[in-house]
Amino acid sequence: MQTAPFIGIVRHRMKTDGFGVTTLAAFGSCPLRCKYCLNPHSLTENKTWVYYTPEELFEIVKPDNLYFLATNGGITFGGGEPLLRSKFIKEFHEIANPLWSYNFETSLNVDREHLDDVLTFATKFIVDIKDMNPDIYKKYTGKDNKQVLENIEYLCTKGFQDKITVRIPLIPGFNTDEDRELSEKKIKSYGITDIDKFQYIYRNNKSVGK
Image (cartoon, rainbow, N blue to C red; front, side, top):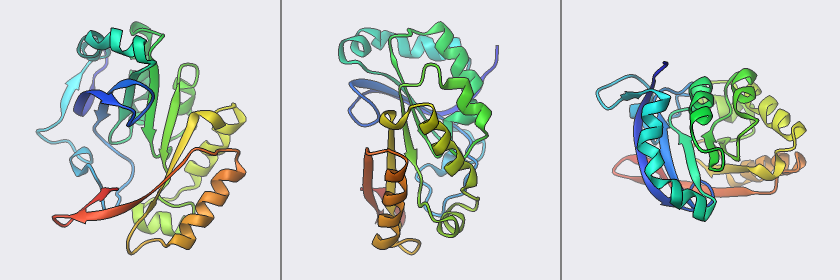
């Protein structure tokens, strides 16, 4: 049985990362190196990482089964980048309740095969695109966004437009309101209408979402 690293599991969340009551299961590891990373402890293995099998994660989550069913809630996979652990998640789904919602907080900067592993049961994708401009994206994350754009298009060809929330931040020193408007226009051209625009702010020299 495979294991995966987690940086945290947070229960009883309401309307923050999916419908109803959700549990956030945040994985360790990420392909990006964002300048203002909100979870820097997810980037490299450290003493905060805990390893679980799919069955062990299910044992942690299943006490909230009634809450999930009563509110159309379920589990949200975040991180780090959860889709890097798509085979783990697929295995988890096979033993968990299929009536739960299965949400993904993701950058979508992963190979297509990871999406294919979860498409048959995915309820919602919450996509933090940073910025649609390739130069801005690479400057901020250290990586190209070609895969992100291809994956968004792919999800839309599969009919997921209404199951995608796109988060577009205003990142001080990296993009502007005008850049964000261009990103929003591009996202809407795919038929995606659920767009969350927010701003990074600073607290104790760290950037957090607002």
